[in-house]
Length: 87
Image (cartoon, rainbow, N blue to C red; front, side):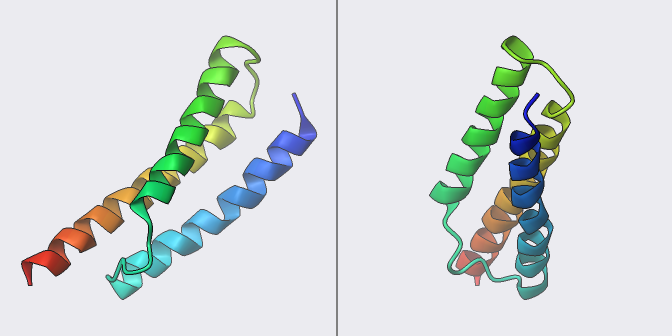
């Protein structure tokens, strides 16, 4: 287990609730890059796979939490993009 890996995930994870909140409150995904969000999602999924198959430890929970938050941000971004196109 790497303390530095945990610190990195905690720092990255601290930004996702704010990003989700801003998307939800503004209901405007303009400026959000879905390709960027999907890359981040794939990165967290890869980290989870590494933890499952190579170095299983408690840090996997941080990867899962971050993956879920990015997933929520992706879902909100898709939802508001569709809503904007409909109007």
